[in-house]
Image (cartoon, rainbow, N blue to C red; front, side, top):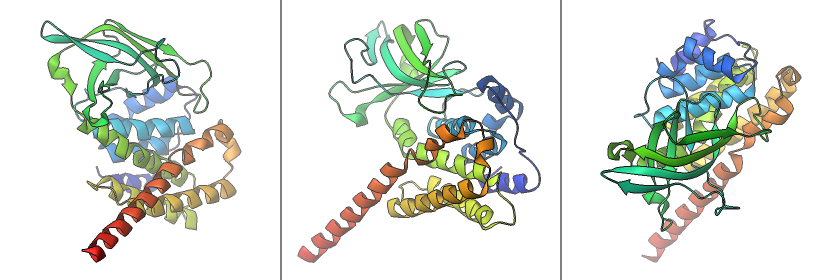
Length: 301
């Protein structure tokens, strides 16, 4: 099923908003509706239309990103991308490292943010290049209950608090050589996460908009535009920035037209809508400068 067909099915009455008060409730809904078996963009849309609050919208976009960037993920359940490391006190919480031992490897170290830490089934763990070359970072996928993995939880996440968020410690975790992959999937995660979460957020708002309204039509257009961006091998950065500005205008209309106070924790969690905006707009400026430099080079030549 394609992403646009998912919207078409919603217009036909599928994917009704479903109350999920806890992360476990939404995990069960995700499994019952087999959302992880859909193509990534379709799962982001369907999972968000079913969502009754923003943490599950992020979940839908996040899980879609992971399935898209890391197609080698085992089927079923949820995964988490464990990449963040402690830059404040790296002595107390050193980052991850791999050591070769008898034809295999041992993973040691820490990660500072793990989504869905209470329920996650698989961890995608990055190991940075010791010399600091980000393109030489490697990754690996391990099941959460592999010997040597300890997950702990934050007491009070800054936002999206209904979603468990925590830390990971790896103590001599055995990793086979064929479980390690190079940088490209990691790069794909970085270039697509914001797009999938924006797509998910557009679908969430669409599910609450009046079908006869201008907002409804603009949200469908925004979602379709995000699907097109996700299909690009290289992001059209200025186009992306324009679509993101339209998305923000839709958020403004949504908050004027919809009773957002009825959405649990909306006042705090609404930060999700803007958490990628500055980066997207900066990249627009980078693209403009690159174009200007190329024009200047052609003139000089």
